[in-house]
Amino acid sequence: MMRRLSLGTAIVAVAALGAVPAVAQSPSAPAPVTIRFGTLNAPFVDPVNKLLVDNFKATHPGSDVQIEYITGDTAASYATQAAAGTLPDVLFTADLYVKPFAQGNITMDMEPLAAADPTFNMSDLYENMLGLSKVDGKGLYMIPSSYDVVTMYYNKTMFEAAGAPLPQADWTWDQFIAACQTIKEKTGNYCISGRDTPKPGGDYQWWADYVPWIDGYGGKLISDDGKTALLNSPEVIAAMEAYTALWTKYDIAQPLDFDPGGECFMVGKCATLLFIPGYMSAMRALDPQPFEWDVQGIPSHPQGRFTGMGTYGFAISADTKNPQAAWDFVKFLDSQPAQKAIADAYAGIPMLKSMAGDPPLPGPPNNIGAFVTNGANGILPTNFPGNCGSLYAGLINQEIKDAMGAVIAKTSSVTDAFTTANDNIQACLDKG
Image 1 (cartoon, one colour):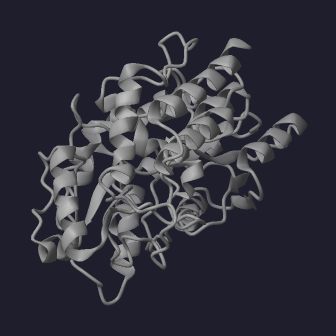
Image 2 (image 1 turned 180 degrees about the vertical axis):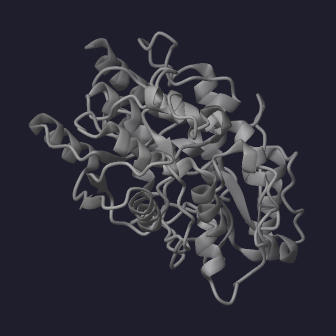
């Protein structure tokens, strides 16, 4: 997902989406227009780009779509265009961008357009995913693409070869760790993949991994009023002791210096992978299948089950001169035909509650319903005020990354590392 962008921006290429029936916009064809479409040129989004463009041209005869691919930093590119008043009509976005783009007058609130459109049923979208499109619980600043909740992929062949019990829906993390220790002892393999990143150790500081532990131990990263950092609270310290113990105590997570020769789960060197639904397409594309695999919901922490969620999507820019045409363009993403095409490609789980009863797709994974069931455990990324960064970038991201790296490398205790991080973040917050 280019995890630095969002949960939804998957690092894997999705299967090409087949032809999709166009959704009628109105009894009479609208006047032809030209829509400028700002988006990424990347495997995870290219088929969806085509889906939207093809539908718009079919339902708006004579209209044209000019695709403008974003190069470099997405936020910086949009900020430059916004300052010049040259933003495209439709913009690629993602959960991490929703609030800053709305506050920066880059995207417009689409809720009035949605409310006035009898063909768009916002109540059919899963509430927790729809929350990613709101700013402080209000508005609609993104049409989300997929029900992207981090769920457990597991190597059934490896579990059975080690004589370890298969992951169950009611598992605790203690039960999971015990099974992983059996796998490490019997096969020599690690249990938790760090996912594919430029360095061998993987993405150990992704918020969707560690923040659920903080919630699971009753902690919070910041006070409700946004003024006080809480990384040195007893609850956060306990959570980070437990999370980093996967490396420092149990030795079941992919070490920072371990290069498995590819993504650790995919190459059969790690027994599990915590990731979003779009990864299904990459696994299914392996021919022959290297091992038997399936998916399961997240294990529970002391205070319950928590897992990260997020997605990419599209929005209407604040500069558009054709808001209705731009709305016609983006709303198709959350129509049943589009969502079915994404699901049939194993590129995501439908955003629509009305599709939850659809027959499951052929496996693997056989337990594909776990993605939706696990959605009840999904949490959103924590927002921080001011200019101190976020869980994705800036000072806050770097301080947490440095603290976690020091603990996993065993050069600092959890208390010392996270107290230092907390002090540095608090100093920034105090500046306003």
